[in-house]
Length: 322
Image (cartoon, rainbow, N blue to C red):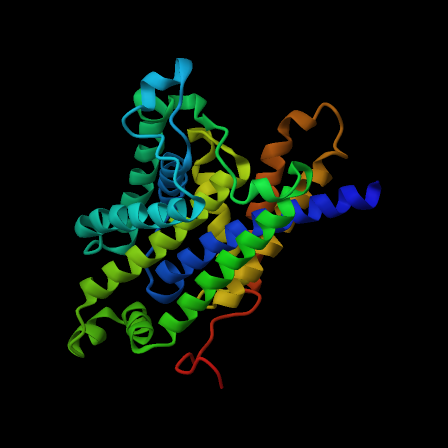
């Protein structure tokens, strides 16, 4: 019985780490390869999750029917939820990029953070849109009819890893192409890239949209795993900060590092939860803040002693296979 419980826990851990790895891969396109300082990941997380819910859930009935009858209830398959989440986040990124991509790094960061928080507050306060702070529950899970509910996580782990592997492959092919080399040139020196005849704004926009679409897929994967979403999930801590830590820990500019950092940092985040169980009863009420402090200290050590991350940036990416 203990072995079964441990295996179920590891499966759950791998699912969440895989979902966060998708977010880290999306952020790697923005920051690792293009130098876009996006700290509004939670906004794309939120839009991706709610869009997939809108597309895949059946039409609500009873007391919940009045608030979503025009937006929700398409009841389409899971794949359409992923595609819709990606497209909606790509469209959102386009409209965000129009006024912000010509700003400096600091201003871009402030703008993306503000937009992400605004989106969360809209979903929280507008009751008609998605049930306000109560959120949505009972989201469908793909292929759930094939297996007993107690063992469903095995199937969902395969789905998450398959989606993560596909996204990893697409990003690798893109980054190791002339398009990807232009992104790295823009990251290093925009003026030089512009003098070489490259449309810097257009390439930045493409990178912003591509990364946002990946983040939207991550949001959809999370929504269908948790089966319930509410605005309280998409806070800067869980939706942005921890993903930045994952990328920095694994290695910015390295897709393998982004995936590794997600698994390592999620393991540490879960591990700190066990550590707080040994705290005295009088201190346990402050356990969440202690966990935040541990992650902050770890990030400081990474930046001071291992700024390149566990794997570091790949210096040569011209060839997919050497």
